[in-house]
Image 1 (cartoon, rainbow, N blue to C red):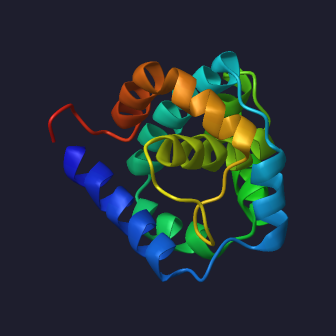
Image 2: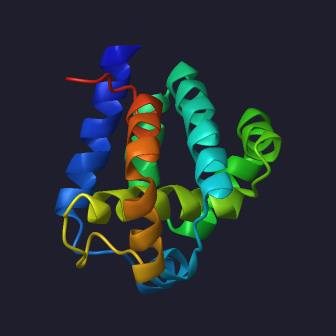
Image 3: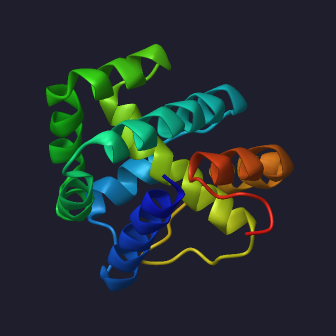
Length: 153
């Protein structure tokens, strides 16, 4: 399971590094997404369950590679077609779109709060960066755990 999580993160990280930037529609949606502590915790809990679900699928590596090139609308449709994924977002008080936009909004705000500059691959609103800085000590360990990372690794 841990190896699968690391592979998942490596695939996603490689794709982000190769990508010229975020498409303008997704970029604006991420900038417009407003984070708060309740929403951040909902996203992290959903992300934990979604990671477990996706990694349990026999074609999870192909899905991850494909999802990197999908638009937000295509990713929402993918969640909507998967009853388990739909249940995960609903159980956490989210819509598929909130999940698809919210997780990267939270991740990039946390990265920015840790000093990673925003740019073509990392976008975050000033309000979300301020939120992430104010809640970094609480949210970063939760996000790391959701990613399958343990402290000190």
